[in-house]
Length: 360
Image (cartoon, rainbow, N blue to C red):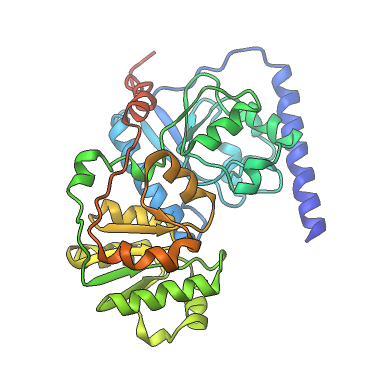
């Protein structure tokens, strides 16, 4: 494992060094094509249904933003593929959501790039609602490789969109200041008018989730047992297959109805049941997706993502430490959803592409 990480870091160092060397011998200013874009697609080559939810909303917004004259191509960000070597240098590459910024970009593989042809990514990547990997990353300095890599690939010619203020501040530390906080792209439809129409009262059934990689057996058992006491039926969406095994360690698995591990299965379930359903669980994007489908929702914080987004937008969240005191009142008492998305900054980010697709 140590050797594999060493080799991976060495390859990335080589790739960036080669690209920077090649760029020193090319003094022409690259013009990005206006009739095509490349989407750095976080839903390809992953079993993470959260990434699929993010890409659903990224796709929706980008299809509305760019006219039919703009050709959209998708390439993966998870895992290496030789197709990465053939991404044209002349296309704007939009990195679609998720936590792909890390202080150690060599050791964290959420943004896979070409190895031999990294030069094609030079100053052509634009961020769309991207965030930091973890709270640890927010507190740590960027490595030299990470600073050089981000400065090399991120374009200085457009505004970048990040999902929270901490990510914006972190990028500013390395001189990347053409950045605005737009909140997560999954939330862009949660306008004041939309939220005002969301239910305030408790429903008879609940959708929940657990997070296998951020386990807290005592809190998670309490959450599930309380949901079983407070609702007629409890449905659990298996966002990752390991979630099912984890639940079996906490409670009688037969007391819960399972929704299979796919976004399509979740969408079918929500389409049939949204009118009598609440959401209360630990998965951030399942919670936000439920809000978009008209559910009253409460997201249990398990990491910095929900905390950072809630601090900026008033997304309904509760900490694990607060559950024993706050959970039952949050379920039983009427509660309005008052999310404040930064519509002006979202429109600012979108407006820079209004004339994309027109000949330049």
